[in-house]
Length: 164
Image 1 (cartoon, one colour):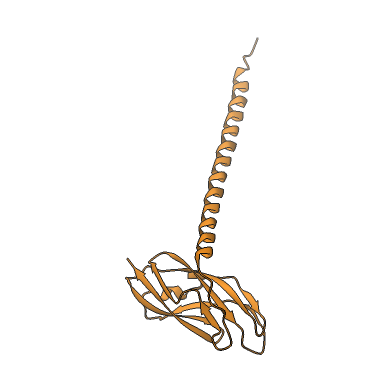
Image 2 (cartoon, one colour):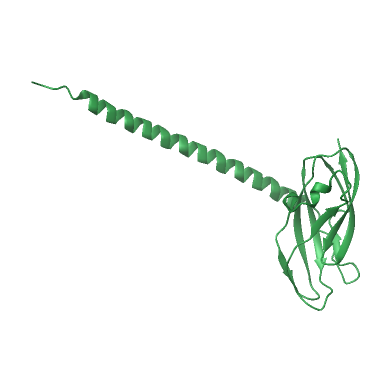
């Protein structure tokens, strides 16, 4: 009695082909995702490099901004460079600026920590540092909104104008 064993050989060849196709598709998917992340990081780097440097802060003006009038569209992300001088008698450790808008305004959600991000830094007494603050502009009606950039007890006013 002879048994035909072609079925088991065919099954293993099919399994190998499926496995190779799965690995190829995984590689293509990972390549696509990596390309998208590098594209997004390049766009952010271009935004940061296009933003002008703020003037040098001093004891009399401890916070300076790259722009005091931000003109943008709702839902966009904006980069604002913030230079901060430490005029106190002690160093500041692990601090970062915070953008706050009037809580009664349509863009008060900008006050949430998730809407803005910057790296924390330490600032020695009598020195300054510059932050790159990434701000997510919330959906709001076109208008001009008054906001403040805060750092410790120091404040700098700015306006955010949302256009259509």
